[in-house]
Image (cartoon, rainbow, N blue to C red; front, side, top):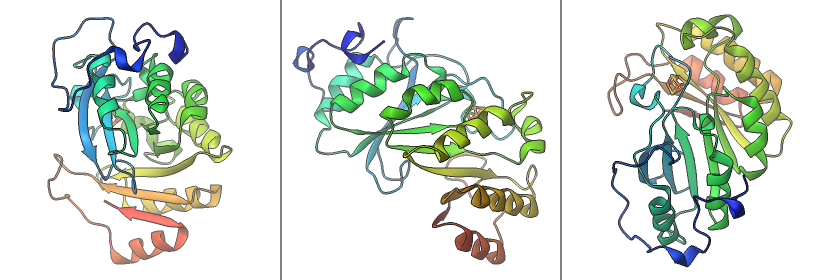
Length: 250
Ligand code: SF4
């Protein structure tokens, strides 16, 4: 469905009241897209951009270290028309809107939501684990930036995600981004219980050799803001900085 034909998006931008305060979660109807969370202002979810982050509820994987298990199940907590009105009021104050999750590509109406956001003048970002390469291909023309999770090397994927043959869609998604003009970074959540420092280096080297130019390692934390259970060595950090044009350790 195109944004112009959407029954969800208001036909005219001035047809709904503009909200200056970020919408609060509400009990919403079953027909709403699964926007289950909102961060009104972020400087870290798309490095270098000030963005609002919309969290889509729904993910078919069950990663051992998932920080957002409440976002694994499809559900909506916001009315899209209300979010759209609020985003209108953010024009000129934010650069971008990032769709995160959960797995945002699990929302079938994502192309429509992204087109609506783009029509307001925002750049569009996506966080994805690469679970749905076909859906990624559909939204790729709308995207300005992607943060793609690459969780492990091929033989370690299924044990981590709790799903069989889970490496394949992530690998196809990566190939698609490498062949596109869309800016992207690959990111790996590092938990030494699942990925040794040596295995992380092997994975990173493989990515660099395939042409990935921007890479981030996200230290696994028991909860957002908690101190990481383990830290990478200085030698590993030096190598990662050497292999990529941009490297970030979070
Ligand atoms: S892909 Fe992301 S949201 Fe889904 S289970 Fe894994 S860490 Fe959680």
